[in-house]
Image (cartoon, rainbow over all chains, first blue to last red; front, side, top):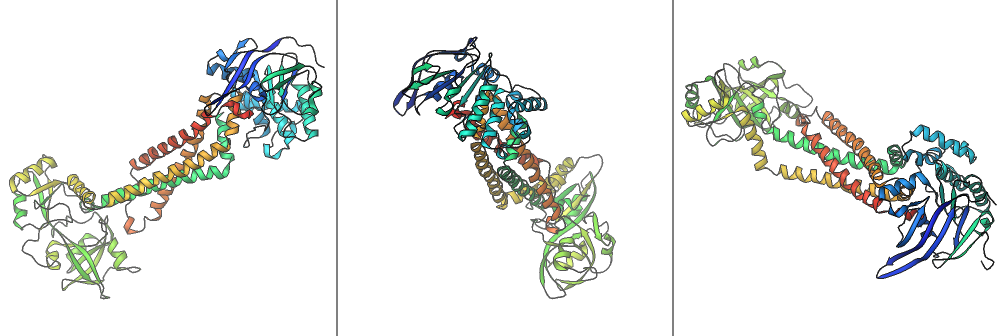
Length: 238
Length: 377
């Protein structure tokens, strides 16, 4: 479906993750071994509670695993100091959230420019770059609007612009179509496929939206904290 | 990122104005109440400040303030004049009396008798007339509190009063600092005052002293006390005695202290509640920023900028409100001469910084505790 993967973006080895609830410790991920490559659009799918959100959080460096190692672009991210890890995320990872999480008080372009501003770029220059990215996503004409003046699909495209504006090597999306109707969801996923995936970038999407499974290069199925399927298509029994 | 923080803050207008109101109200309450408190305290020294030419006040050893004085025999004046370093010494009488107005009303007044020859003891400035009017028979000069209270909407000049069965004619209006109790004051010559005040053997309240150039006020105080057995105070000491008397003998410090404390508590409550609501409303955005790669240090600076901005603007509005209040009431003799000592805005600034630091820190804790992974849940 896309160009052949050219390099290993993420290497997950023997990952386990426990959560404590009262006196009880629950293991939500068991011995996960995954490699994700640049140039791939990888889906992580599974039922609610299967551990997919926990797994993606660990893979992008925002949740420490209980056991195991995660190497992102050859960096053992959980051996970085807190400051280095934050810096690593800022420079290498783009995030797309289910609820967009745009800042309501600033316009769409400024929202899209947030990672560049956080990197220290001048605000006006960052905004120009964000508008250019929004142009690629066909929403440059909405640059001056506040998030509450945009539709759900438009807000998600602003969130995609924010995830890509600083040209990260890894893009992580959490249920990007969950808050959208079928048509808007499909359009957003087509756009992601078109813009986010290239040979220098890996894109991981957590979803349970079976309407967009056909766009994936690779699908990982999680069940009860274990990877039960790893292939280009969904297994037939799902 | 600071720009984003400020926009986040100002974008939520309801909470932004709520925060500004909280800080401004707190500042106003603290600054205004402290200002009134300090100015009222200083009224305890108004009797001293109104007599600008006296370097030293001499009195009976039991006298404490200009209003709490025990009369001395008239020979005290000669004793003081005999002390070396005394350039001049004049008698001064302060007493209370009841005055009957031409309408038949009774008003408690303070009678101040000043030296017949030099008129030392009168306030420096006059609103109407000149000090010389006291040379005319039965003359009194009324202060502006008396003018407003006893002669509203009319000029008191030429009005007749009855004091201790004696006639008194108002011939001038003094520009004096009101006393702590805002009592009406009538100034007259010492000899005339003796007629207006019901007679006792000793009448002399104070001896006002001017020092020679070659001696300090404190040295002169020591000499007078050593040689006469009377109590002597420098102008500054006696002014301080008046202030101390109010502090020690009234509930004013406690009452104002409670109000100032309430201002602080109201500030903490309103600002704390509104700020934590604001942070809670934006917790997802802060979480997203943390996930994206904004460090805790930067988040802390963002929250600090938000708190700082609210604090600065709210404080400015509060101080302006106090200035407006003082200005608006400056025409009322009760508030006459009220000013805002520079220390008071500084004290309220410290209070506001404390409020902001406390509430900002509490809100920041919520943000810092938020795990970036929470945005995926």
